[in-house]
Image 1 (cartoon, helix red, strand yellow):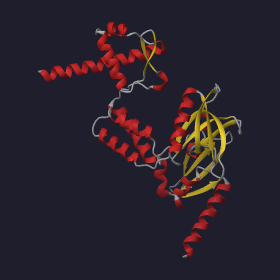
Image 2: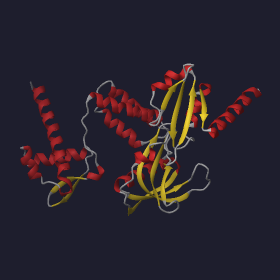
Image 3: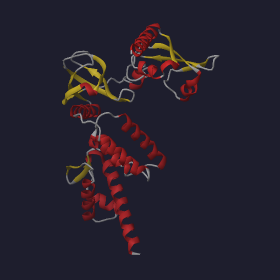
Image 4: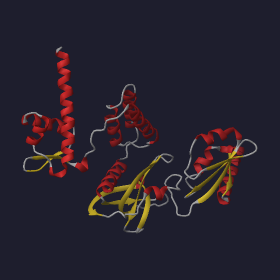
Length: 330
């Protein structure tokens, strides 16, 4: 009987902390007095103060806006999320993709995964923790983490970010001041990108790879994001991250032995598949740039033939002839 009573008290406290957290969030920046909370919860003020300490110890960012009021720092906190089993598994899938695709250590991703695992049922919980440990083994890149942190805060708080950026072909790093509008991870290239306005050199909206940034610093200057900016529209014809107002039509012929696999996936919003008499198929796409598409085409080997555009067909034909010569050289 004593064990049941103890469990009831724990559950009651957990529910009280949940209501307290929601009350503080709902009060916004003006906050709420402990006496008001005590009346709402039907407890003494001493209990409210103990609960406030418990929330603070649980890393809920509390502050005093004045006159004995308490509030949550809204811009530093994402509240508790309650998940169904199916929602938890959906997040677990996302976490597994993150682990498989991340090629660099991200301490925030590890921490988030460990916290989410507490909400997962077994055996998902144990496997999520194993995924977090696996991610901890990734190579460390302090500059990347610093750039990601600065750009994240700049994105949320609408603040400019100064970075040094070295392009894939460049030898020297150039200083840019970015207005981060959107952050986008790209699985095929194991990379993260920022979409935003660059004010010192390009003076236009650019897409930059975060891994190529060093010395990132969040500035006090704020910016206004254009009301008509829509990241989905910018990326709608991209195969990965490279969109274009003038997309290219690509037609690929696949052999019968891989046609079922081609049809199993929805590769791109623009795709159209037509069958061929021999049991194969032709996949037609409208993409912003063919550069990101080339590695995917190569992955199919002789089972995929580029029909158009002609420059892409010529490029891959030259690559395959060079590869054949390399293997015949021995």
